[in-house]
Image 1 (cartoon, rainbow, N blue to C red):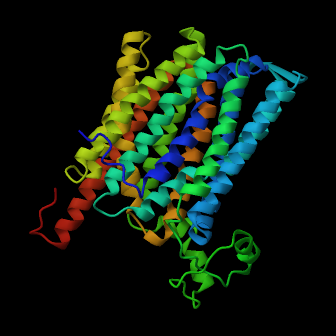
Image 2 (spheres, one colour):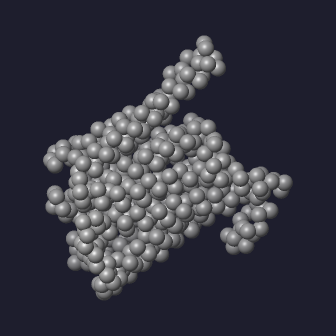
Image 3 (cartoon, rainbow, N blue to C red):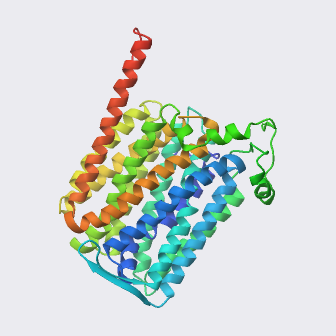
Length: 450
């Protein structure tokens, strides 16, 4: 049996880039809460620190998305990965610096924490990484460029599988390396090295998917294009209306495109629910369950392993047989159920919840990204993916901060709120389905709507 026949040569480089990027990112997940508390922080500081990345990604992702539509995906991916490498270097410096106390605070709202110099540097690193963190939206735009209607679902399923594979190895490697004599320093060094490898892979192996550079009349990009040696292809039209082009890429104009408002709402709500999960789970496992970084790493790696099986072979098999909307609905239902089970203080039920969550996420998210990639103007996929990423970033800002704060007061009930959010997504999908069905029936009473 050819297990990897769904890996085509055209998408393998972007899958490799995505895997390497996720691997570097996921390495820090199981150890970050321990780094924060060791440097003087608490759950409140952990939540605020976690929100820095999505907040500045909210600002930077649309900029990088629009830029990738103009100068190409490859160059923007290099910019993004370079920013990640610098951020990891700052992270490493923070672990070496002495724990100089800047101020301390103790209240019922924030809890007791000490703000130290290394913690401040961690905030700077996350801010810098967030602002240049448009690699996910640009990678999705890249995949949209090279996908056809026939292989789109399968390609985005494989992209999800490469993400999950990164999440399998990252936390597992972090748990092992953090237990060595170097502690948390070794995983951070590895993350920095991985970022360098990603830059090399993009530069050497990744061909440009968007060679048509538009709007050469925009002088603000002139020096930038010259610096990156952007080649103007024959598909460029010198008579492009610069004003109209700019108006077409605004958030309001993108939001007016059919189907986009619902998908952006789902993007926001999905990230909001998962932000509550990622804010609450490390605190839950390290304080109430008394797990180590290795225990949390195994838990997350198990989740990602299940998602690899779902997003790879299963989604590839279902591609073209089951619609994106149906898969999103099934996945969302499973996610709602899994978040409900996460509130139970039992290892067996937690792993059951983790299994259901992984299956649900494996079905829902690649199907959602595939649907988003074929919605709206195909020439503005970088912009659409960038704004979508911003919706996720905006939700993560609130989710990570509120998750850390809420867990201090309501503990595992925060996962019940996440369950309700996925239930809301399911309701929105059903409402949109019946509205679409009624509209089509009014236009053509004899039409059959699935």
